[in-house]
Length: 325
Image 1 (cartoon, rainbow, N blue to C red):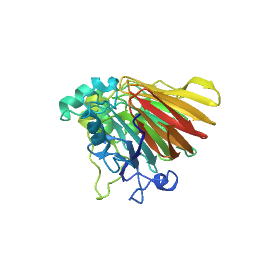
Image 2 (cartoon, rainbow, N blue to C red):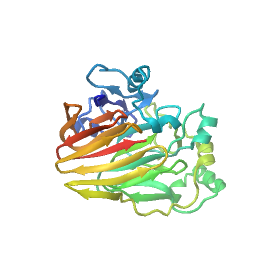
Image 3 (cartoon, rainbow, N blue to C red):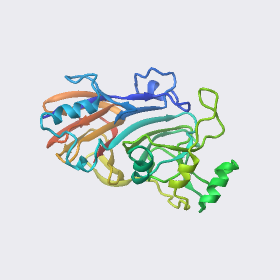
Image 4 (cartoon, rainbow, N blue to C red):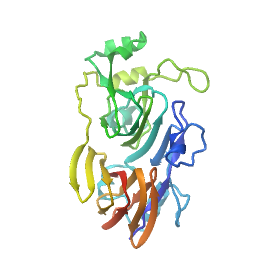
């Protein structure tokens, strides 16, 4: 059995970040304020690395290639439809509001962003301060001309759909959806392997250099869904509840499937040759037993399990997100 890989994230110090990743999630970040930890990433703008074992300190993409050279596919059969590793998982600490933004779909990104993927993503709300909210689409239909005029006249906020957010909520953000994570939210984001973002509005603030951050209004207008967003229920679907384990569907699309587990004692995960499995712990602590070995975990940890026929025993009261393709 290929042993689990504990991952060490890449960190981002965007201006809206806070301190929870270091103070509450045990991250060894070099920044006083850390906005994001890229927990599972093979992206050139920030790769996660393996922590411990024979591949200690090596980027995950290099480990995947090392096994490929041995004729072993640890990513899984389902990833064959993609020409690169398909998923990127982040922990996001929003001390301040993120910019209002939108992501293109694959077709637009491939044409306009040097062959990059577009971005569809899901947010799982881990923590939320009282009154926290986010932007999820528009509160009314708009034409492209009206959208551009609102951006130019600084009235876009009148058309944004502000939604209260609480722990346990799930927001599926399809490419083309105008969105923004609000201040006071701590989120686990599962997304396509892309770093393509079109910023539309930035609340009138400046970047670290004292200048307004770049906007991408024309591209945003090209790709945005300008129809009113009518979804109101963001409660994840309960799939199973037995033996002290609750399993919820967080998201399911062609790019990834995400399930949320709450375990009061222990739970067995079954991996297959179809897909790798990535687990990010949101709370608790305990042990992982796989292949006759035992690994400790605590909240904030992310593990990569190779695509293979195997059983993994997670022991300890905890909550985690499992991602597959």
